[in-house]
Image (cartoon, rainbow over all chains, first blue to last red):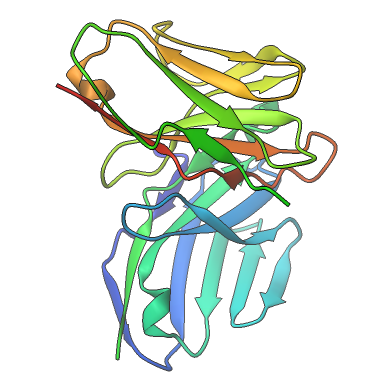
Length: 113
Length: 113
């Protein structure tokens, strides 16, 4: 079983719609959860992080965390073509490993104009 | 505020050679982590340096080694290069006393022929 799992997609949404990206993790001891955006050929860019159960909003982005279900999601409202990228879910705090991050394989998002 | 920097941007090496990649962390950060990202995969953790010592290590052979300098910059060394070492090598920095958000540099694209 992979430690962090994401649907690889591709996920396609029309411009202006809500894009929903999902991630599950295996270790209940995980403490911190992150979403990165990665454009083709570029490095990952941190867009959201969440530590507590519930929702966290930042502009058009909302991260949702449910530790009981071991589930993290990212909602992108009013999706724009510039949001087309691969979105990586990252988790740390596995088994007292502190600052070590585990990444999913990413979900490819395409926003259609 | 300077972000994470890496050098070189691209590198082509021959199988069996050795390579050194360099990273300077974001201002105010004291911890450097190195990742390998193969095409279509999420970043895989190689190791992490803090206070000039390797603190954690992922599932990589000891051909992969590193160093951290007093100014927090870091090097990744790979010996006896294999074709399978071709990947994007990412450096990420963070602040140990913070909440572990990691910020990535632009990466070094290594091609082994």
